[in-house]
Length: 89
Image 1: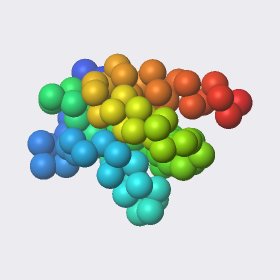
Image 2: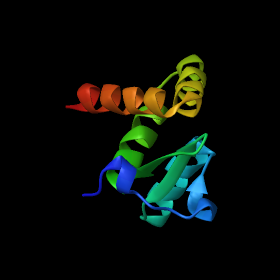
Image 3: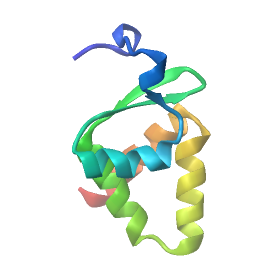
Image 4: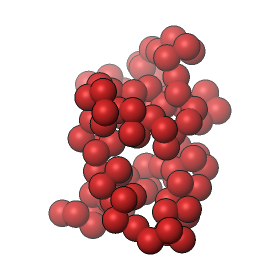
């Protein structure tokens, strides 16, 4: 697996609408390249499905918080992913 500094993605493949990318990743069964201000991250299908499942189980108030958190920054996104994995494990 490549480290973060070795990930080479063309700018046209980077997605900035993180929430839409989660659903797109699940629906197309393909990885997505995400970006927060140029900081890339690869979203795999299993993680995208986890985020989608957790999101759909939340109340409307928490759905809004969830969306804001994953869009805020890469670190915030990673924190939400870690929380989701710990919750379902």
